[in-house]
Image (cartoon, rainbow, N blue to C red; front, side, top):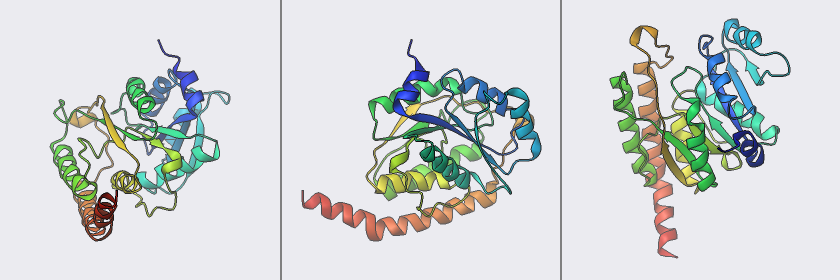
Length: 254
């Protein structure tokens, strides 16, 4: 059995956990992550006090994870960039990102880290089973839509471009990239990384979607899908005018 705590330390890797009003699930997620590493950064994205109160009640000062705390709520994209910035300040080179709503399984950390260890320069994406029970129909459609545009923009086929379960090579992330602040930022991070020449690979992970009455989601179907559509239009134009022609010219001169 691998000593994951030692591997995280040797790799200078951490786990970044963005959270927004996940007081019912955050402690369980953190406890399960701690089975693999104590290198944890929680990004409190303007939550109500209940979320931080839950963390403070569960962990004493010596066990409490690193906290990035700000207000008001700015969105997941902003939270991720703040988490990356803090991770780099602390000397980390890689970051696993995992949601705090209980949909991701911390027990899949070995799978994504094994994929990272085999592909150390790559951005690793945890690919969810989109036919799983309770998977919302709108999520499946949005993901297939996003996958199509990502392939057009980068030439890379990926099964789950909207998964937030990832391993980022932090030194390849430019903190000055014009990342939008909300959900669509995860697509931007994929596209910008691919355009920069970062390999992108994936590994299967599990996903849990609670029954509708128990589900907590901050996804706004109309507005977030609209924002993703606008973003894809812009990225596709940039790809057609700049990235793809440059890629073609480079291939011709090899």
